[in-house]
Image (tube, rainbow, N blue to C red):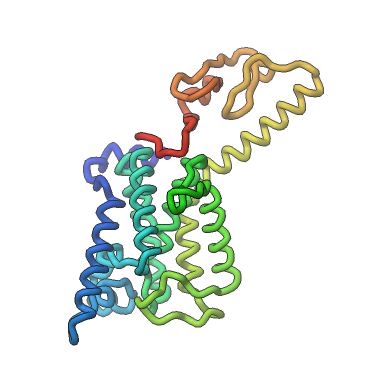
Length: 291
């Protein structure tokens, strides 16, 4: 993204490192504070005071625009496990993109959530769907990563991403009530649950802004590769050079130069147009790649 590159050159110094860890620590602290206050009669509910409601913001409680990020979307063991995954995946995205781009990814999701809060002003907006957009981004960048459930059963991260998309579809088309509402606010009836539908759309928008062009490029490259393969099969001649990104061969452009990428694992050859503009292939054993 050229726009992101320009923004990073000007504003990169403002990026917050380890953002996922800071958010997780904040949510954990709020959860503990809420548990402690629950045992004291008359104590204020921290989550109720920090959650994002458009109506409360319009009433003058502007701090909710900032504090809602630290309101946990759930509780219990499952939430703690999800929080751990958020830290791991968020850290991996930051290592891959750099702190600035990961900050922008989270910021876009937060801004979209704030917009939803003003569209449905009486409902509490949480960051649960923003966390799911992190899962989708991680699965797109590291499709071969495996998550070991109970440290024994390997689950490819792409399966988790498919489940997220399935959940999005069910929420959009069946009016399913949000699993992130918890104790944070009144639920809308399932047949008019616009809050969840809008939050799903905001999460998809966030993902599409960062990965939409890459996905379309891969689709087009796959189509071109199939066309080149069919043409080569018809001609009965196998090309000597083939670009691993776009499928171009020396038979399509006799003047084009091809070169192997030294940063990709295995033998991956690219044309000059994509030698410095492609996603590097890294063969992994299931662990997280480095930055």
